[in-house]
Amino acid sequence: MGYLWTVVSFLGGLAVTAAGDMVSEEVRDRLDHLPQAILRLAARRLDLKQRVAVYEDEWLPELTYILKGDEARPVTRLYHGTRFALGILMSAHRTASYLRQADSLDEDIVTAKMLLAAQERRLLEVAAARGDARLLQRYRRDLADSQLVLEVLVERKRFVDRRLS
Amino acid sequence: VRDLDITPKMARVLKVFLEDPSHSRYGFELMKLTGMASGSLYPMLAKLEGAGWLTRGRENIDPRVAGRPPRMHYMITGAAVSAARIQLSALSEQYRPPVPIHLRPQAGTS
Image 1 (tube, rainbow over the protein chains, first blue to last red):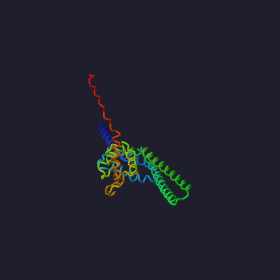
Image 2: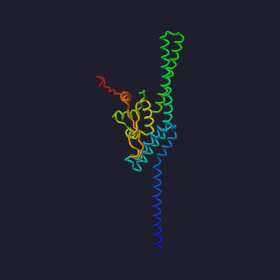
Image 3: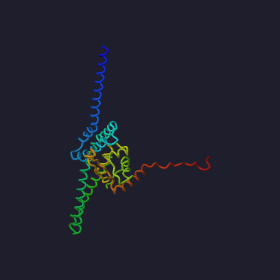
Image 4: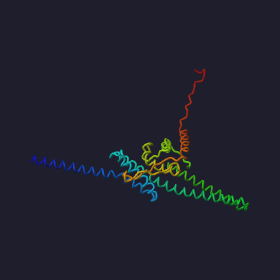
């Protein structure tokens, strides 16, 4: 009877050890994918265009470097990788919103500058030709309006920049 | 380069670039050098790049050999070097503690 118990205990011990190894391997494998899963979640907060420029080109290669780098030990890489991905996740909305607003404002500022240049040219032409005084006055008013619009856009861009920092 | 309001956090990043303006830096490297989290650093890099203070380039590696995709690195632009030096000096002046005024006892009162 004693012999049987010894065999059962031995086999039981082996089974528990094997199960423990399998569980730890499974956990290690899943934990290795945790930072990437968090980063994928962050990428969902970006527009499609931003995903290529920011997620594919910037965040993912950096995370891959952290996870595969020379100093990557299992616990270190999990710590650095998760910390990196969580930080990105927390700021993804802010980054997306900034890039969206900055892109759109940059386009508006370029358009406003082009309009201003065209209006200045028109005003100079009419002034050089000693054109109608009322027309000249209207063109001056248009120019002042455009200058104001440009100033508002530049100030708005500053505000967006400040909010990000 | 466009004018930027330099914050203390941004100053930490710019200081790293000014130590050697010809040296490009990676995001993770900047995180370690400045002690900043990715959530603060990456939006700031986007902002500095958008304002023309930094340029972004791709790491020159063969992804098949390295076993990973190329990373992005950043370098400060020539125009931004002088602008950053001026702004950092102004910020340092702004945060400089005032010189303490030591009061001397009036003559003949002790």
